[in-house]
Amino acid sequence: MANSLKTIDGPQHPHLERSLPQHGLLYFDHLIAELQTKVSQSIDQELKVVIENLIKKRQDGLLTWHDLYTSDLILSRLLPPERLSREVWSLRSRYRDVAGLREYEAYLASKPPDPAGQVAEKDLRADIEYLLDEIYLRYAITPINQSVSDRISNRVTGVILVGVAVVVLVIIINVLGISQSRPATFLPVLFIGAMGGLLSMQQRYQSVPREGDPIDNISELTQSWSRLFLPAISGAIFALLLYMLIIGGLLQGDLFPKLPDQLSKPQPDGVGLLDLVTQARPASGSDYAKLIVWSFLAGFAERFVPDTLSRFVSRREGDSKGGA
Image (cartoon, rainbow, N blue to C red):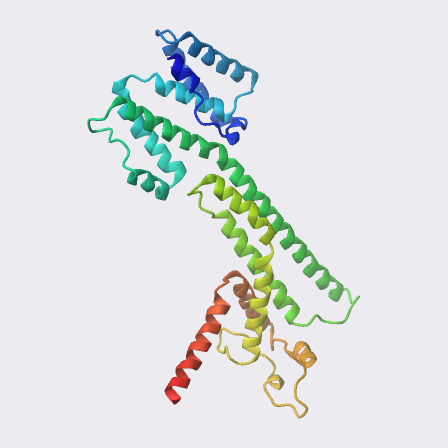
């Protein structure tokens, strides 16, 4: 037991040094209650000292995930041989829940020992320690992962609120008559498209799967901070492109907004960019509402506008081949 005591802490992970939350403390109390029933057994005195130190840390409110892991590891090493197979089944179920089905299937593909078969005791104990290590690593990292996701979501929410505040301010200015100029339609189109891109990104971050390497997942999230506003930029561009498709008559129907007739009529001197910007306004309130919805969808569904353009290209290529 002295040799095993030297390695009882198992692999060291800095993330395991985080303080235990309330549910972790409840589980620790459960483990300690079972450990204390075994202290009366003929076990190594040094191991008893470790257990006593853990209990003291619990009383002082200094427990970490590493301490909980150590308690579980000690208990697993004190299990009698007849309980090992049941412990393996229990830990595998926990591992499937915290790591996800894909990681669990990869674990099964590595052909771990079969608890129902004739397996050496040392192999079952090795499998138990491996599962405990993977489980507790994810226990400790999951709050960090969630914290990073929450910070990103808060930033996105802040940007959206600032944008909404600007829109409200513009509306108030026009209502109070401070300014009689109306913003060109393409400005709300750009804004709504950008908001759609940001909301789409926020939803993706909130639904990021917790499967795979937990360290790599956090690294991906932190590295993505530099690309935080790329969806807003692409959403605004896609919304503007969609607006041009509607103005050009490439997208028509009851679902799409209608524009004033003068835009579709040839002008003697042609149409300048300023004329397009100032005159391309929806014909009615319902058309304006449709334009807002489509602008949002252009930013939110990032593949919508690229796929629409691809269909135009494919159709053009098909017409060219047919004409040849």
